[in-house]
Length: 344
Image 1: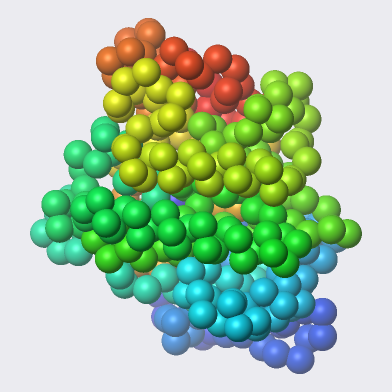
Image 2: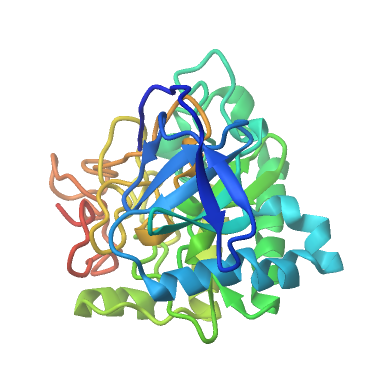
């Protein structure tokens, strides 16, 4: 994602939906363009407004209104939810502006940004930085954490996923690319929550990031079909995330650092384009939240050419997700419109 210079024109107003009773000010200048959304800072710089591009989508509007309304109250309003609500970047309000639906979400806490003195200064601590030995080489030593911190991250992830599952929701975008982690402190924040799906709603039209798909999701992608969201597929992705955060490699990889779906570092393009029409965003499909707009640096957000040429990879110079790690057969074969995944 790329960020344009911020400006200071008069704030614009987005109205809450479905009631229209609240108005949210945001600044048009300084927008961050994602694959399916544009993200704007509010007038006070404390939250962001994410507005979808393209034609209105009644199913998406209904899902976002449920996400910011009853799903939020029923999940985070419980005693268990209040105790761990900081584990989620949960939308606060569904809004509309100029016929475009969207939502308001808080800016990420500073603890999820890399500190001064490194090439990643100001960048978000997205999970992919800590999910492979290759990417860990770019992480500053004081942010890398120790085993106990990684265990804390995994425990918090389990608590977050258990909470949404207990309330009848699934997260079809769950992956190391849809969370912020701080192994040095054991903190976690699940992002991409506009992927969340509940009964009676239309699921987001996209694919989970490569390397985290369950066998059922991988087969659906091979057929060009959208997968059915399920708790079982979420648990598959969660298991892969835990393994990667602890061992810095994919569980199906034959050697450390050469995994299909390994996320690359800064300057790469198109790594996680997991949904139809997505191109080079850090979140596959509509789960690409863009509120990681909340700061000066987009380092490492656009990734391409993960493991092209690592030991165990076939085809030096291949670009794309799975430059043929030997256990990755068909795993990341994308459906129509998926960009940047299998360009190997």
